[in-house]
Image (cartoon, rainbow, N blue to C red; front, side, top):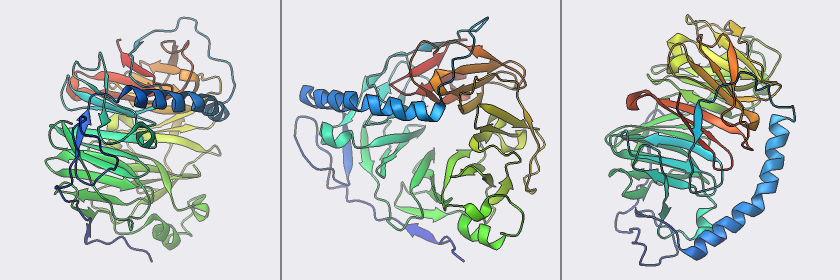
Length: 407
């Protein structure tokens, strides 16, 4: 049986003597020390970035079309317009957004996309690491950004973990052990020098010393769990490929994940030794899942192939293999749904392919179409509301698309 090391996973921390230099001093290599953020790249760098971005547009559009399908857009009759497009300084997919105050935040995206706001997201300025030239920077896909009281983390691919203690004025690169099970998939700032990281194999780690050491929270790998309970009746468990997708954390630290094939899902709560697998209860493959109102105790939601949305009751017994879901009344025209978020107990938003948006005013029972992004080409991938900052809402998508909720 494979067991996650319950002892502390020691990560070699870089020497602070190798520092990032200011923009005025040119340096060609990324050291594992302190990083200095520069406000913009030089003109040659921007030209190279633009050229690479434009040459990839056609291939990206073809790939997206194959995922979301070619069905016509939903009807616009009586559709609302509750979101406003906000310009961002790059044209690639926007993956994540986070704030450490009601005015200051960061935006991350593909091909080294990195932007900062100091006015609550009304405007965004490009940021770049001063000793990464344009060709090197665009190789990174920054996927996750997380802040807590001025301390922040950024996770990218190829594997790159960055940490700041001064609201992004300077950054340090945190080396990660090659023995990590799976690839890092998420990072969450929890407080001074403390963060939580997950991997594609289902590992959950916590550091309380800014990434110098990481302590495993899950003792048993998903592979080992499924082998141990293979006769339990969880459909698709025998086809598990060793990785999970769509890991989502609720406000209290519980996790929800989908197997990479979409044939079953798993849950984990703090204090449990292993992930608990669950039947999906439908012949359609799972696309994404999440928590109702960000709370595992208020229910789960699930999107399926073909634009279906299922929502469970608030009383979910996660000790059982199967959960009862009810199908929401949402007419997607066949477009896949990529994310769902609760603004409050009644107002719920769903986003998906071809920049489709839907809103429910009855807690997710019935949805209507919102045409805020209907004339914009691309796809929406994420919708987030920040309750701690006035419940501001943001929708993120391809081609540098960022939408702000205006109600």
